[in-house]
Image 1 (tube, rainbow, N blue to C red):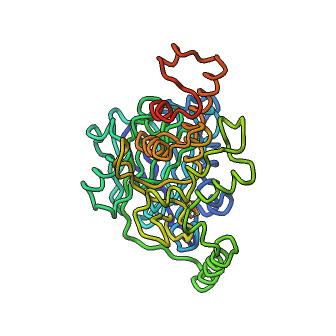
Image 2 (cartoon, protein in one colour):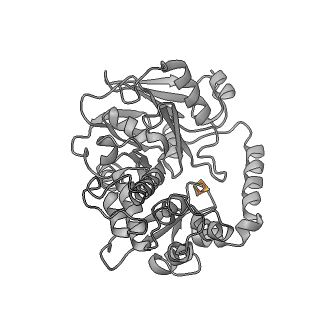
Image 3 (cartoon, rainbow, N blue to C red):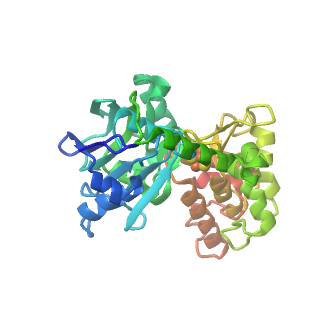
Length: 398
Ligand code: SF4
């Protein structure tokens, strides 16, 4: 078939049970009728998954996909989609992440990967353009997502190798295991990391050196320029608050407007919001001088949603990484915790263990409420004093 503009033009289909790798052309009909990675993944699962399939059985199918403009320079074009039947909900599961991994997959020559079966032992998939291998991951099983990523990058092409990894939480059956892309970006929702673990698949690493073409480069450049201007000229963007604080800017706003989830959403205003705000994070942990604190955007995006920081003293010294609003709200206001060090540490721990930080924080908040209501007793919590606001107990729960 003639390759459609924007697409790499082929999919990888990998059967882990039988160690079989196939490269299959992406049909024009599929591209047009189910535009984008999310649409294509839904179509594959709808066609190929029997409704009764156990999400953690080898019969589940894991799809990781990009769309036609992934890697093609417009704002927010670094996204990647992950889909399977969810072990958390028992129905269609879908999660989405940013970073650079999706674009790298397309530069390697693939629009997506369809993974079936279960490897007999822990493995990771390594892709370097035409080379696609299933490699032993025994030495990586049990390791956190940060160390896994570091080791794989060291064994291949350094930071040019982009890594999607799972952590020990998914390996141990936590139903909301995440897939962590390029250290800091999570496809966290619906347990896609747990599906990956059920297939004995620890990571997927990719290096791509190819390029992509579009059908009408001149017109595409105009559209991309308009999209960039729409973001850059937006009044909200021009305040530079998002650039300075990332999505954490929303925390103070939500508190002022009265919708900040607080103490398992029993309340919507948190009296310690200033302690865990974007401004507090910038002032205490920022690793770069003002005016623009350290942050990271996904590929080709002006938004820089993540704020980066490092704790340099105290019991959580050494904790570092990138955070956003949702995780801070989940471990912070939702648990009634105003200790920013503890919130930052819990957030980075959950990423390293490979747990969805949102579900993790929300689950702890629920347990806190159950404890305060006398439904979960002190003994059932093995002596943990799990009241709202207890930062140490919140970290211990993670
Ligand atoms: S930087 Fe933010 S807005 Fe841009 S793609 Fe990543 S998550 Fe989306």
